[in-house]
Length: 148
Image 1 (spheres, rainbow, N blue to C red):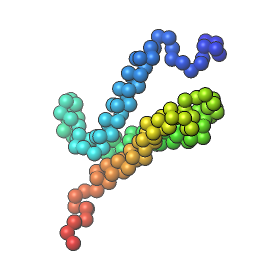
Image 2 (cartoon, one colour):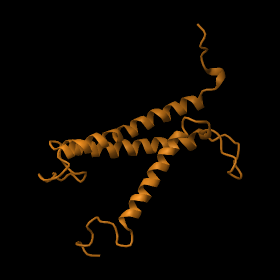
Image 3 (spheres, rainbow, N blue to C red):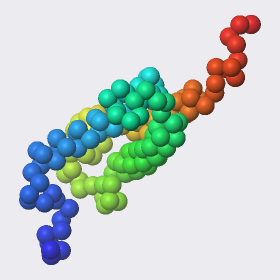
Image 4 (cartoon, rainbow, N blue to C red):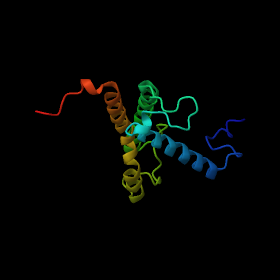
């Protein structure tokens, strides 16, 4: 492969439509796993898992990937957001003057409004992981009573 061929584009055998579909499915699947941190199915193995069915999921099995994912998402979207606000690409290069991602254009404002919520995914995942850890680590007998 020559330097000209290494442009960062997808390989010819991997069509863009398939890439977008795979990327969407993976990101939706990972987002769906976040729901397991707040529901019962994130605490007990489902019946269809042959050996583990019905057993409690160890806290670390859910917590470690959640915290790792939260760290990666916070760094990724934080970097992308700061780069965008500074008028740079994620590689650090200055955006061309005719780029539709300039904040002073309508296109740039729409892109910012659409992608800004993604910058919250990492910190919110941290919060959900912390709540999962607190809920699963404290037994019912250790919880303070709600009576005055």
